[in-house]
Figure 1 (cartoon, rainbow, N blue to C red):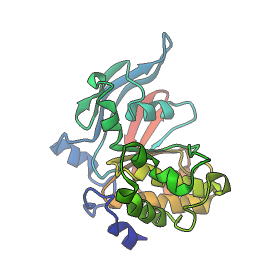
Figure 2 (tube, rainbow, N blue to C red):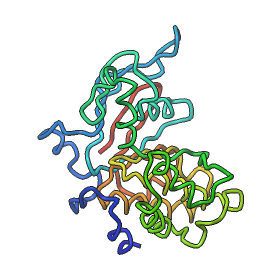
Figure 3 (cartoon, one colour):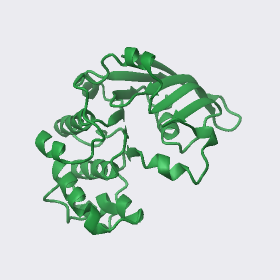
Length: 253
């Protein structure tokens, strides 16, 4: 699998060789080139209490982290802020150097294309084949199939769906749907991948396989953030943990 992945052009740059999460704090003290940065971010819905309070964190290039916490802690809200589908009530969120509070509607799509998102419920279109679902972001951006077909086929083979690319989603298993969703998130070659409970609907062996895909992707240069409450999954890989509880964040390097 690693050899196939290396042949793809999904990595903007090769990994540094260090373990994800290692020396992140020291690295951040030398530079401010974080891909995403939160400074004292708070968010409330309407006149209610703050859902997130004084959240400060950074996502560095080529980093790997888990986002975890109990149900209702605000993980989904934090993910929506990361993807710029919400704006904070207070504080600063910088995405690729841009203050999200000042990003215009016209500028937003270009920033979002640099972020891949894997949803827990897959969000595949049932009337499109696996290949067509994965290719959809490129098709809607106006690219010709002759320009992207080889990339889509290579990526589907990398996630283990080379033999299932012409199958419709209702025929796919839960694990196959999740891998198709991962491939769709990666086809635009994002700098960051956000995955919301990507192993929530699969059995433990497949969860481990999916984790290996994320680790390999990170090794090739993409920053990865996985939102999960699966402690067993997190124990399988030594990475930075962002723990969210009662609206506040604690970070364990």
